[in-house]
Amino acid sequence: MGDDPLTVQLHWVDFWLLIHDNPLGFMVDIVTHQLQNFIGEFIEYDTTVTQLGYKCIMRIRVKVDVRKPLKRKKMIALKNGESVYVRFEAIQPQS
Image (cartoon, rainbow, N blue to C red; front, side, top):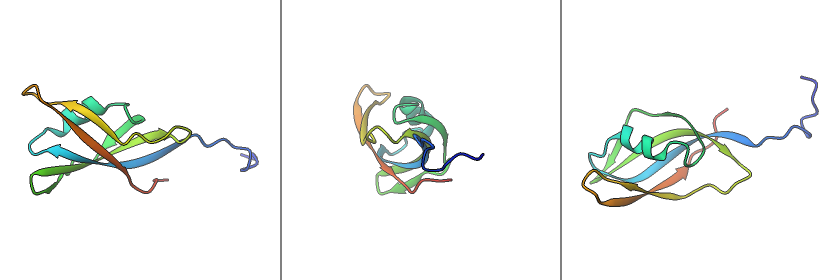
């Protein structure tokens, strides 16, 4: 309190991110485990998963260091030994 807002350093912002290109049936817990703290500090995930055809979209909430560029994709390993890329899309920051 009493700080000049122009001198307060704002380095961390909470974001909801959409994770695209999850293979159908890929467990949300497995994805969040593999992505844990990759983008930023993991906070929570939305338990609802949206399906678009054979792909799934999920939402996770992370604390992101805004001084660094947002990572756009990550390769994750499937149980069958294959790997796929999932993509990230930022949603409006939450207060």
